[in-house]
Length: 280
Ligand SMILES: O=C(O)C(=O)Cc1ccccc1
Image (cartoon, protein in one colour):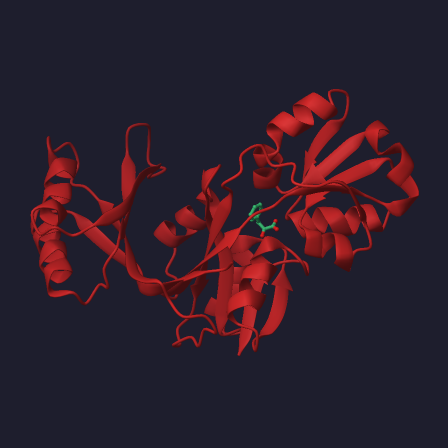
């Protein structure tokens, strides 16, 4: 099986794939939409992309792509602990405090905001497509006074020197990745939980509609673990809602709840019913 992932090698997404699907052939893509398109065009059988970070919240690009496009179902979620390190080219290791530019993925930069603010007031910050893309760029330019924020695997892969470890601002940093496929997937780890994710569009201008949707779950004692609104992109004040349910979608009570929500005039899109895997 081939899996598209947000590359290059040694991104956090790569760590998620390697931890749970050690036997797949990993194919790196530059962006999240390219990963999803690759599976839709049948170039690969699975795509693994970041979905939500504990410090930064949802990865909007993934969420919006799942709402606005037709995609394969989510077959698994992978939760990975995130440790960010500051690294430079070995040629710059002695003068690392004088770096002029720091590069990384926007989420990684945001997770280390306090560190960057305190240590590098004069340096410019530049976003790259992933943490590993930033590390790779720094490794290919020994002459530049640049630093990258990335993980330990990226430092090893691209021969960079970690000059300051664990530079994320808060300790409990995890990211949720999702694996999407038209086929059943074969994971190495055992799952801790069966979950489902749906997206709900409410009927226009109906007072109490969101309350009614939540009631359909509440009185059946169906446990929800996330509710988030995202703009519909049709004008201010128009949203869709993403809901995570801590039950498989086949559960009779979940099925009744979904029917009731549809009967209320809501549109429901099921993104998948999947196992949750935790990487230690
Ligand atoms: O850039 C990466 O390494 C990714 O996989 C995306 C990401 C960025 C920051 C935290 C978690 C995942």
